[in-house]
Image (cartoon, rainbow, N blue to C red; front, side, top):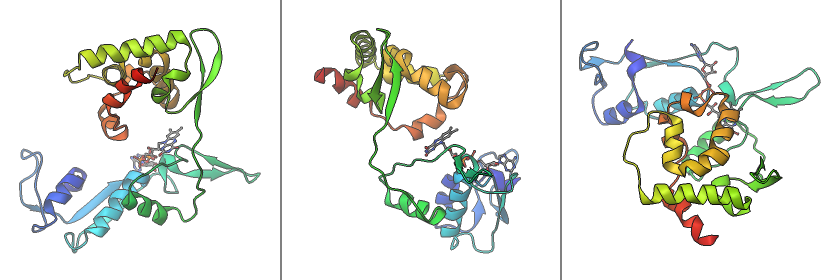
Length: 229
Ligand SMILES: Cc1cc2nc3c(=O)[nH]c(=O)nc-3n(C[C@H](O)[C@H](O)[C@H](O)COP(=O)(O)OP(=O)(O)OC[C@H]3O[C@@H](n4cnc5c(N)ncnc54)[C@H](O)[C@@H]3O)c2cc1C
């Protein structure tokens, strides 16, 4: 189906051009096929965001019919909430958002009318290598100084190692990506456990493509940490 292969990159490329689909796979789709319909599968944040963007680009997609298919009886995907019979509201997944982008903020205001604004105070409750549980301010990678001496050494040693020898190898999974970005120490002390808890699968079983966008973390900021110790 043509619509499934339409990416926003393609949309951008088409913005100032006639409404034609430039195939990313010429063996299954002739170039210059006219886009007639676009089908978005899923009405979570991604699907709704794509639909909104396509609507904003309607001067490009005149006469193109956009359909969103959703298997549940409500939109929102993992970022939706459910109210139980006692009136309690349960967030399925997404419930907190941080943004520095005006466009994104405006889109969120369209999606959800009422927001609670809070100053962030988030901590990870972690068992240190010394056997003591303590709250480490989040993001943990910025607060290594709050860890016990053993974990601090592990984390800083790992960061020194990756700082000395920045890897150019493409990671084959999320675990390798973590070690390349945060070092073996931070990966062992926090990153693996945290991500296994969040995503319920081992970090070695996940690919890493999504994190490149999700966590635009600059390694040099981490490497600076050792100077504050
Ligand atoms: C426990 C947890 C906590 C989270 N907390 C936060 C947070 O605080 N802040 C934050 O920003 N993010 C958070 N996230 C992440 C956030 O929920 C997701 O990044 C976001 O919901 C992803 O949006 P999406 O549209 O890509 O996918 P989804 O939200 O998964 O939506 C996909 C949609 O597609 C539909 N669908 C799937 N298959 C089909 C099909 N074959 N046909 C039709 N419809 C289909 C699904 O029903 C769903 O509605 C959390 C995630 C989890 C699991």
